[in-house]
Amino acid sequence: MVAVMLWLFITSLILLIAFEVNVSLDKAKKKGQVRRARAQTKPKT
Image (cartoon, rainbow, N blue to C red; front, side):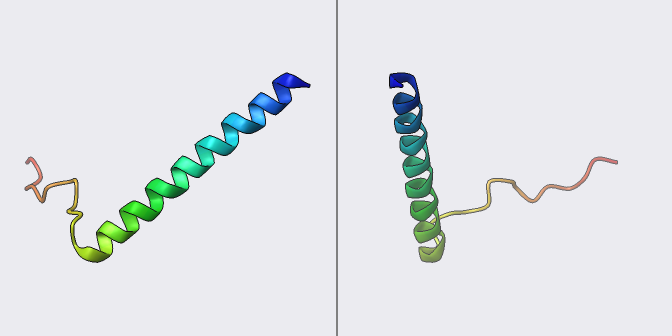
C-alpha cells in the first residue's frame, strides 16, 4: 500500500513539473525569448 502511494506521489510530482516547464516555455515563446534550437544549415551534398 505504501508503495502505491509513493508511486502516485512521484508520478504526480513529475506531471506537475512537466506542466510547469511547458507553461514557462510557452510564455517565453510568446515573449519571443525562445529561438529555434536547430540552426538553419545547408544540407551536405
